[in-house]
Length: 313
Ligand code: ADP
Ligand code: MG
Image (cartoon, rainbow, N blue to C red; front, side):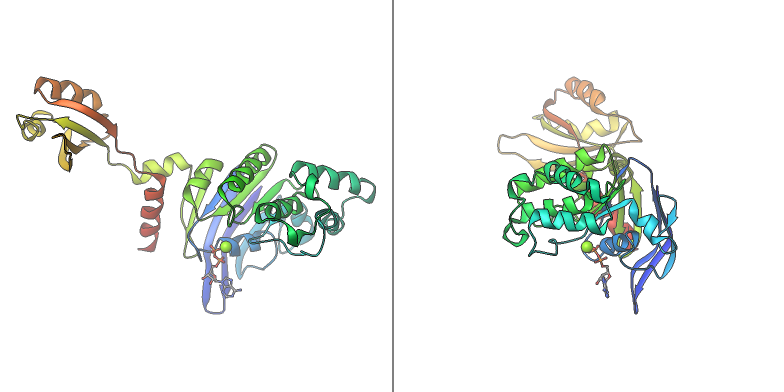
């Protein structure tokens, strides 16, 4: 559906996007994730034909965006970064104007505009000037603009930036819903957002792709250490002898002393075995009482940072 091959964008001496390649299949919801200045907007601007790449090839729905821009653009709905332009138009005027630009059949135009306004929850404000709307509504207007012409692909640049939590939830739900019938690429610098909405994540930093994977796999990739946190009461100080007794344990480290006399340790397993059963049985034998036991998962946030650091080396 979408393919980027060795795409580079240079602004003078600045390389904003550096030889990236990736593809997006029909129906996927892909997150372009990276910190500010990573090259997300530049990538999206090239994919939508707003700017031309310095090198490389971009194929959208079978058409080269530089050679067949009209045909390629037909299947794309684009929601650029920031607030919508044309703030002196009413919501309805704006969506109608977009329908003209996108050459929606004149006979169907009115009906299609209605439908989109309905779908994006803008019916109540359709006669208001865009500039008088709240940030959340403006974002919906932007989304409505992207939906005009029934594009198969939606490219959404930081769709939740500047919104309050309620508006963020609304937009996210809207994207999830649209994801059922569209191929979606969205950019974000928030990892939890991407992992909630997307089934594939492309991590980009300093113009380069650092990782492409599912949110789940990304976590596993950086977290090959298999660790368990245990909080125990160990009055006889037996924990020191435990390590030698259980061959599956690689290391034990004290992480916390609690006021009630319990201690928390992080225990690392050899290989990828789940230590919990072994710990439970062996600790009981040694008269160590377990108060709490949990797997020490790397959060996606930590995974993100590790991947980005790795990409900078
Ligand atoms: P992101 O959207 O991930 O925050 P951008 O694609 O906006 O990143 O920017 C990537 C890099 O390219 C940044 O270093 C930015 O300063 C630079 N850049 C973006 N647009 C321009 C431009 N029009 N002229 C010069 N440099 C630019
Ligand atoms: Mg950006």
